[in-house]
Every structure is written in C-alpha cells, then in structure tokens.
Image 1 (cartoon, rainbow, N blue to C red):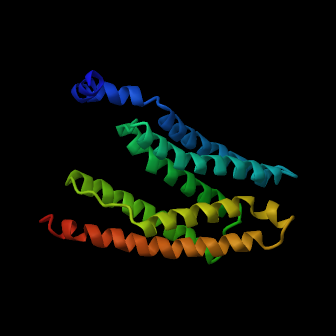
Image 2 (cartoon, one colour; image 1 turned 135 degrees about the vertical axis):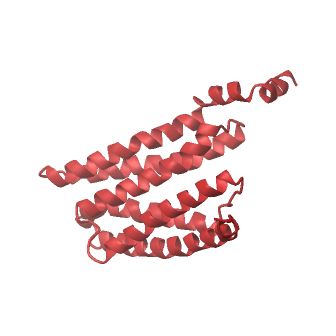
Length: 210
C-alpha cells in the first residue's frame, strides 16, 4: 500500500523512473532503427553488390516491428506506462514507416503511379497526427479502431516486403510487385481510416467557434 500511495503522491518521480524501463528502452531502440534502416537502403543503392544490405534492413525492420508489440504489452503487464512512452510509441512507428517509404521511393523500388500510394499514407499520418494534437488540447481522445490496426499491419507488411524488394526478386521473381499490391491495399485502408478519424473529430472542429 505504501508503494501505491507513493506512486500517487509523486507521479513525476514515477514517470522519470519509468523513462528507462524495458518497454521504453524497446521504444528507443525502434527510434534508433530508423536511421539504420535508411542507411542500409542508401548504401545498398550505391555500393556494387550491396543488395545484401537490403536483407539487413529487413532484419532491422522486423526486429523494430516486433518491439512495437512488446513495448506496449510489457508496459501494460508490468504497469510501467509513462508519458514519454505514450508520446514516443506512435512517433517511432510513423518514423519507421515514413522513412522507409521515402528511401524506397528514392531508390526506385516505389515508382510511377505507386508513388501516390506512398503519398496517401504519408499525408494521412500527418493529417491524423495534427488532428490528434488539436483534439488533445480540447481533452478529446480519438480511440484506435480495429480497422486502423489492420491498416497499420498492412503498412508494416507492405514496407517489409518492399525492403527486401530487388534482393528477394533474385530468389523469387515478383516479390516487389507483391509488395506494391500490398502498399495499395494499405493506402486504401489508410484513406478510409483517415476519413473515419476526421469524421470523428469534425464536430469538435466545427464547434470550435473560429
């Protein structure tokens, strides 16, 4: 009971202690993976015979995606949820997906009309982030829907397949094409869920009085 009372009386102190908990360390690791994945894709496109770096990028990406599940699960199971964890968790996800999409567009894995799928995904993430920030000022929360979770899964799988891209095509032709198809599926889900979020927050935007 003393521990409970202490945590209630000193929330700031508890938050600082949890900043270096295992769940948060996993989240930090996901942030660190972002430049590492980008670097692998950059050098894979420059170095002769550098396709092996795409496999390394995929491994880093998969490990980062796995931590996305475990950091939230462990934080809830061990009651180590913290403000910094709640802030960084969605940011780390968006950084990983957005950076990967930009690098894949840069090296030509995503090109032509498929670039629009990447644009839709990136624009939606910015729009929803801005909407959430605005609603947070009004103390209004927008819950994550089941379809939004499927959208996230589709994005993660599509990007993972495209990271292997040209390297995987040498083993099984058509892998990149399959990744592009998945990317379009993710883009369609992204559009729908983005509209869903906007509709949920629209009444607060309209009622703002500006």
